Image 1 (cartoon, rainbow, N blue to C red):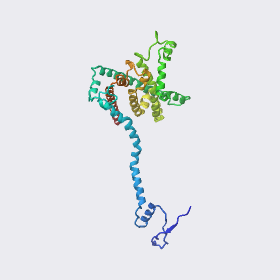
Image 2 (image 1 turned 60 degrees about the horizontal axis):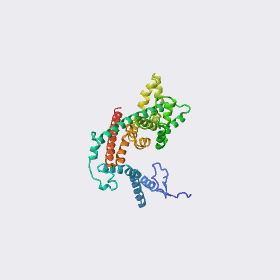
Image 3 (image 1 turned 120 degrees about the vertical axis):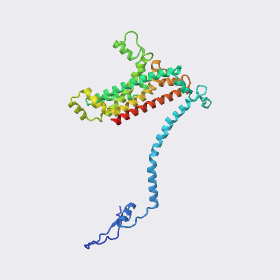
Image 4 (image 1 turned 120 degrees about the horizontal axis):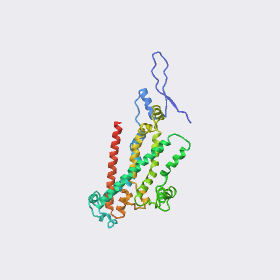
Length: 361
């Protein structure tokens, strides 16, 4: 490596005491910004940047300005192709009389405007009554599933908060339902709920003797709702456990110690320390669980084989049957748009209430 060649700059003025001047030395191949700084230090006019340097600066400005948009562009394109385009297509389909006679060529389907929406919300007609009944079942199912999933997740997270032997193994076992594929897990539950050969009836009837008389049906009739609820809670409560466990890591142990010194018992510490500290986590968790459960299609479709009983006729299955069983895709699209508007309204009201509470808190 060659050493830099130095040249002598102009000498500094002599001091009043007559001391020798100290020459200013700089490398000949110094960077442009260093040479300009040196020129300003000795009073010389700075040199203009060369053409290559100006182009380099221009490219740097362009790269800094447009790089964020280039990085976001793939996600935006996928979002438009996967969500926006199908949603707009569904809105257009809801304004057509799109039946099996026009499914091959959409251009021949008559335009009916808002007639499908009028028939959907006409609760005096058979279509409106069936949709309203399915909506009520879905609301009850979602409320129970979200509450039980959150309760089980909170209980397990509090239980696993303190270290003990075997805690890692229990965490792994608790999170197993969330890691299993949906179809494999629900099909397994379908075998468990079989009337004659299922494990559920074997335990309840043969082993424990809790059910007298004939073996109950779990996949048809009134019990189908409770069977669907059990499978839903089993699938979603590990997610609540995961979120709440992460939130408890940020709660200082000093708060529990201070509450214990003040004489607060276990339940008082839960109500005064744990729940207030988990409020931001719970706000997001409850909203996500609500949207997931209300829109759940895979669980009832796989558990009941595509045709759910009336007692477990969730709105997702009801819209599916309205579209593919009766071949009325225009009516099914209108129901889907109404469901989307309902979920958007509920989400907006929920976020408004929670943000207002956060501001006043």
